[in-house]
Length: 358
Image (cartoon, rainbow, N blue to C red; front, side, top):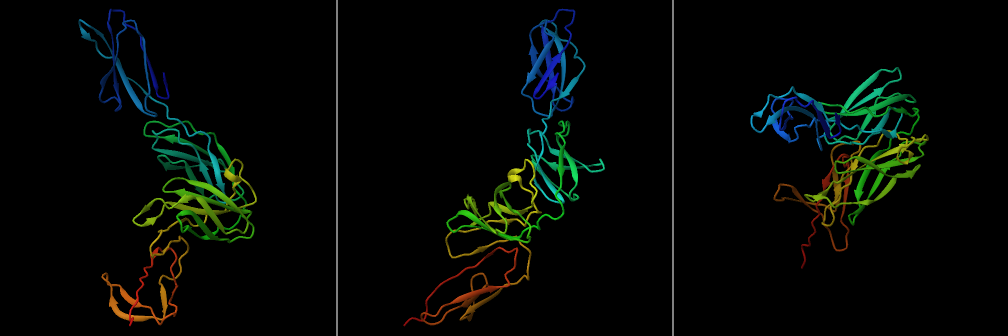
């Protein structure tokens, strides 16, 4: 008998006198055995153990023994594989005309991946896989306004779990909102909270759904805003994970919501394709400015204009040219940056000094 974490062994007691039984176990498929348990009851015909690892193959054999004569020959080998728990019922969190994002619960540490089957409208099946500890997958390339079935199971090298119940998903019509773009996220000056801004590319959204990924974790919905809104304030994040003077611990994406809600989805979100993602960056204090944005590129050079500007011809200890910007008392000094490339992270150093005093 075998269940999750438990194995039961049964045998027929011999007709001759014995003092007990030695039970050996192998965890390498029956190649090597070690004495695992001793049953000192000569009339015993049953033994069990529990607390075993999920989805693991165990091989057993038994010897009788007498205190006077020692062990008998071993029985034949018997083996079993403990159950690998399945992921339970899958759900859909976000849906578009050509994609669906599926979620499930990872109920075991013994799997080395998950197998997902998509049942197509013609009842053909498409199989794909994700790795260990995954709890979601994006199914892409779907047809708008079409019903698909999805089921998921856990697997490792020796066992597969049972399948989750088949989830029926109908994609959205083709006229869902266009995906937002140009998403930029930045920590607030005091390091508490982050502000998001994006470009609204549609005129038919009912609102926007905002997701955040902490570090390398899973994406979570953190809020929604109404139609035509292009900003969002996340008060539940700080720039606490600063390494090397930079904080890149929160990543965001935004999706435009369509008119049809997804039953059972967080917030009832029915979404366009997601925007670009953007990491929030900030270095508190100092005289530096950090800029980061994962948005479409423009010409990749930067033009700077100081007014007034004097070229000293000098360089610093790293070989960078030193430009002096200065003028007379009460004359403002300005810096204009243009042609700043997108997809860019940069640091601007500003050094102040006074010279020429009498």
